[in-house]
Amino acid sequence: MQLIDFLHGFLRDRTGNFGIMTALIAAPLVGVAGMAVDIGYALDQRTTLMAAADAAAVGALSEKSAGVAAALAMTGDGTVAVGSQDARHLFEGQLGGQSGAKVTRVDIDISRSGGDLYSSLTFTAEVPTAFMTIFGYDSMQISGTATATYQTNAFVDFYMLLDNTPSMGLGATAADIAAMQRNTPDSCAFACHETQNPDNYYLVAKSIGVNMRIDVVREATQELTHDATKYAQTVGQYRMAVYSFGATADTAGLTEVAPMSDDMAKVRTATDALDLMTTPKNNYKSNQLTDFDAALTKLKTIIGTGGTGTTNSNRQKVLFFVSDGVADAAKPNCSEELKGTRCQEPIDTSFCTPLKQNG
Image 1 (cartoon, one colour):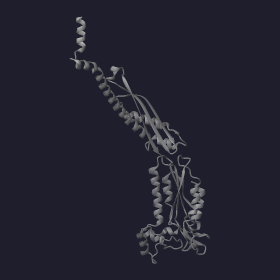
Image 2 (cartoon, rainbow, N blue to C red; image 1 turned 90 degrees about the vertical axis):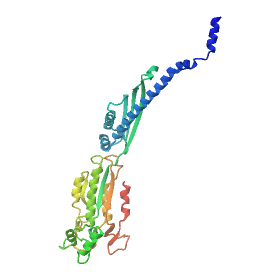
Image 3 (cartoon, rainbow, N blue to C red; image 1 turned 30 degrees about the vertical axis):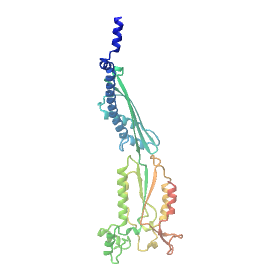
């Protein structure tokens, strides 16, 4: 009877409840706190791994990387194996053995699709735990994926059609024009290149250091070759050919100055020869020496059909036509008033249409 009374009293007694409850929940509280520490550490390790993955995904598609060079050399879409190797080395190099996680798997995909390159690096790792071992968990698994995209520049063939006809002997600037007028007896601003006149104004321009339009065009074309070299991402990405309207009035017509080449130094050297067309005398052939229509028609055949530019064998075709903009040729259906057979008119853009239709 006394035992029963003792048990009833014990159950009704409320003293010591806090201590008892604390003892009961101590283990779970410690476990939860420890879990938070382990999870926080795992998140820190994932941040470290993600930083390395991001660097690898982006670095594999850097402008001068082996992966980009290999992708640009491909003739079609597909996987870029050398890029995947680069990404793996970059990922491992970024970690440098400093991560507290054990990387168990790395999947890398570097591929080309159309004009773009894509990289993807996915990792899986195990992070050791300190407190969660109480609950039987010796490690936590973490994972992540980093991606990057690189838009490649196209493979391009540049066709430079440069007007070197007599009107391009005009001074390039107002100061050049004024200098020519001061140094010629009839105040002429044009440096006419007449072979039958030993005192022609072309020689005057050269002797006083006047820059003619043709000089500016030549120098700008040569500067473009430097830019093509500077911005090319792979060998052969940019090629160039240069054409003029002929070195002499007797051979006037579309003339190759520099053949199509990816060797910009050779193109640059060949373009040194571009100069103002010579004429025997003033008003030779009624000055009908600037036939835009004929030049553009011939170039259409030379240029052919343009491609998408995504591969070396499917190149874009771009025509640069640099001129003062006035045609001067024999043309019956002139848009301006004819002077005999002579037609002086702005460029007839209808001759550009077939070129555009060819891409």
